[in-house]
Image (tube, rainbow, N blue to C red; front, top):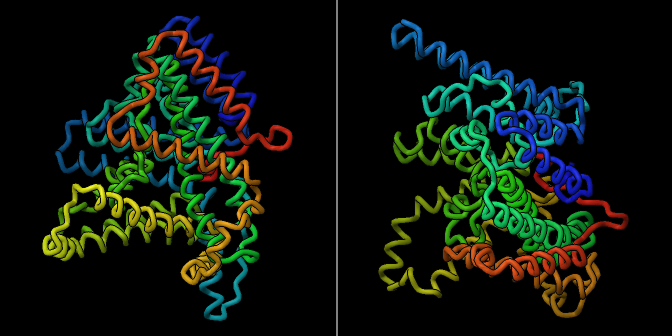
Length: 498
């Protein structure tokens, strides 16, 4: 079930009405049933994987709690705790490997053997990738580690824990919640205040604006160029790649914001997943603002266990590259994703290595890092580097990415920006201008957010008549200008495939 589908607009009111009618002590059971129904709307049989991951991590938590209470030596307790965590990780990651990476590994091995003229036929398994599998498995595994680290208690009630893993607003595309936040809320089962409801409605409106008005409109142009890349050159690729940066941002951030808004209607508070990332002045700052739940997950559960920055400069830089390579692989079973991840990691390694030289040059040249000019240059340079990496993320394979990259750096058809050629790439002039206007609104909103100004808080402070008029006008605008498909064919969210 998609957030932007008719079914969801029937499903959500039913869930909310029953949620507030039934006694608070059984609300978690209702949300659990609703969450499993929500997930089963895609493919009912794959709910077994969701349940399996839930059972394994639930048992691992209980076993860890039991081990801690044993009258054993500290060394023995530590060893058995690590064994339990390892077992939970092996089982869960094995599920993820079979459904997401098995064919990728087989095809990679076959290509390597072909180089050495070894003709070996491997069997490829045709399995449908379960929606949201990377998200809920990572969320479940974080619980196991948190119990191991004594950062959270082992949940005794299986159904409450199952709701933590399957909570429908953020089940299939995040944010990847932590047990320290969401599980504790599930145990109290909050009730939304009037402020929560107003905030939730505004969040959902903003999320739908980003997804339906901006991301899906940009997607038409980007798909035209990337889907038929051999027919285009140079500046077509530049425009499409720049627009893709906004498409994936609005698509993914839109989902996260709708999830936050939906949860707030029930009184739950999910973590912020995006914080004006394209206003970052460095790639490292970008990753502190982009997909925050995943970035922090890798920081806490991979980078720090690898040693973080505690084992010397060389090891620190290697750990960064490992984390970003794994992050790329997490996004998809394709070498383009790995290159995308490594490229973002390499940006930061080079920046760290060259930092003393950069600081010396800035001092000699008298550069004022607080000046508007410096900030603009830093933001633009960061966006360009990030956008180059997005090209690998969007391309179907490395060959396409390199072909397009070469054409970009030798571009000579600048005139297409002025002669109307761009209007033949899926969007007519009116839709193209509407897209640019919507992106402008997005940037203004992000600038306000970057400065700590929350626009929706200002709206919530207005009189009731103004708020309802604003709701009606913005919803009408989204309905009239959104991209719905030829026969209301709602578009999938990009991150569903991850």
